[in-house]
Image (cartoon, rainbow, N blue to C red):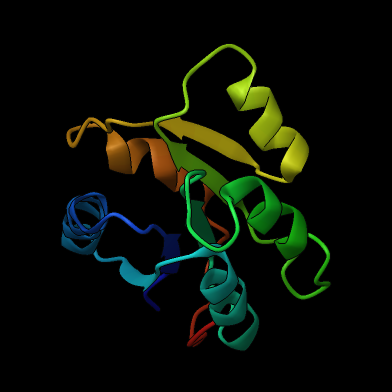
Length: 130
């Protein structure tokens, strides 16, 4: 079973880079362009991991993470903030909003998969989605 990663990202270049890296490693990457779309996609087809930009249209990443955590079927899915917000306190703010982890942009293509993999929920053989 291929682990499914939902990447909530409005920037095309950021999405294409992350998708290229993760797809090359065998992961299925699904995209949402804003927080509301990401929540809807997560609810209809729960992923194994959510990568979440913080600067998003419609609802920012903090509000998105907080709302994702209110849905019982999504509460255990790891959410990793993938953001250019790298000022003092930004990591703590993302964790307080419900994120499990935090990765700063720009990403390093050589080490990105190694940063993401520890957050992936184990996939059960025969599972098609969460």
